[in-house]
Length: 245
Image (tube, rainbow, N blue to C red; front, side, top):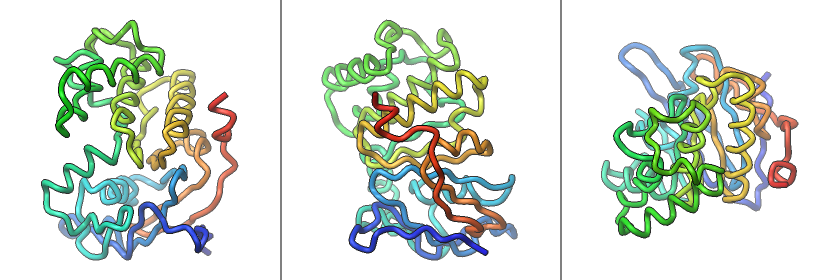
């Protein structure tokens, strides 16, 4: 039986899907998924390989368009937007953290972090100052002129977190954010990620195969065969108040 998470009726969801489907050739990755995510909520998505969890993340974030159904963010139907406004939405309102960081190797840390701001029209000097400020908050001030190849895996992921948050997004999407890190570094990275997202007042949606990573969130969605199998509350490892201390 599916355990259903219910958002308060008086609070409209920040992000939701309405019966979305997505196929790749003959493979149906999503088979009619409806989920709602509240402002400031932290949600982990788990499931077996090929279950549709990454496809759901990509549809929620506007990277992929569903074949049917709608994705709605803050009252706007994301799945109805053309490429350019959808790209601008991702740059200005969403932040992304990936397993391998996906930092641009030729750029310094501060240039990588400033890039989303510059792509949305922020002058270079102002964007660089904002990047320096964000890197300082994450304890990376001394590394701001280093390139990704000169950083440890944990430092690169913290830089990726800084880049995700520099635009003050409403939602941060993380795809296996600790998958390339050892256990201790991954634990530290998740503490930093959840703390900084909480400070920003943003929602967090992450895909993981590791229940210990999922437990940093307050809610778990389990996807099987393109459908939501379980939707339940979690007792997070640390509350927002605790990680902000």
